[in-house]
Structure formats: C-alpha cells, structure tokens
Image (cartoon, rainbow, N blue to C red; front, side):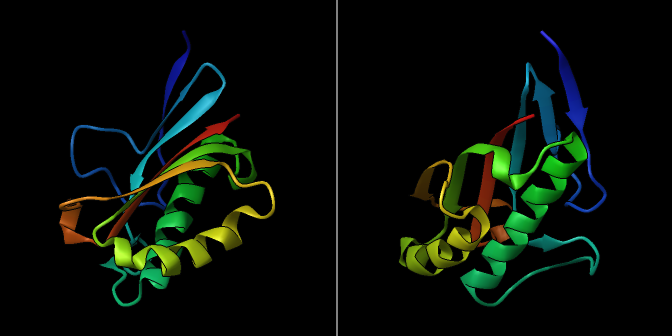
Amino acid sequence: MSREVVSSDKAPKAIGPYSQGVKANGFVFCSGQIPYDREKDEMVSGSITDQTRQSLKNVKAVLEAAGTSMDKVVKVSVFLKDMDDFGEMNAEYAKWFGDKPPARAAVQVAGLPKDVDIEIEAIAVL
C-alpha cells in the first residue's frame, strides 16, 4: 500500500496528532476542516453560509495540495452543531459540487473542535 501525508499552508494546521490529508492507493482522505481562515489567522464566525464556505475552501486547499480537486470528491461528511443550520449549509454546499455531487452524510453532533458550528471531511480520487 502506498501512503503519503498531505499538507497545505492554505488550510488550518493540524491541532493534534493527525494529518490534514493522506494519499493512499489512488484516494485522498481529507481530515475534517473547520471554518478557520489561515490567511487572516482567525475563525470565521457569523452565518453558517460563511462557515460552510470557509470549511470547503479548506477542503479544497488540502485536495489541491494532494494533486486532486473538488470535482473528484466521492464522499463528504458534514458535522453540524445544529441541524437547524442544514438548509443554509446545503444551499452553500450545492454551489461547490454542481450537478454530480458526491455521496454525503450530514449529522448533528454534540460538539466540534474550537466550538465551531461545522466541520467537513472528504474523500477524493486522484
């Protein structure tokens, strides 16, 4: 099995013993990305739309560092602090994946790192 750690200076640094992403056997596994803007060095607050957009920008940065792209994503998991945010998250999410979106799960969780409202992870093909 081939395995390579992926890192991007455009996405949040890992805050624990994990990698931003890992390439293995033709896939990229992107760790959960929170709405942290690394350029501004601050968490994006405000609407779930803004937070979703930033989280997806971070996913995109990791995927690009691995040599793939958002159009090659096959599976996404969305973790929401409040399922009442689903509709607004879904509207922004739809803009990123066009007419052939990946498989997806979206769940409400009790808590997320840094007390954010959303975290998004993805799996893509190379």
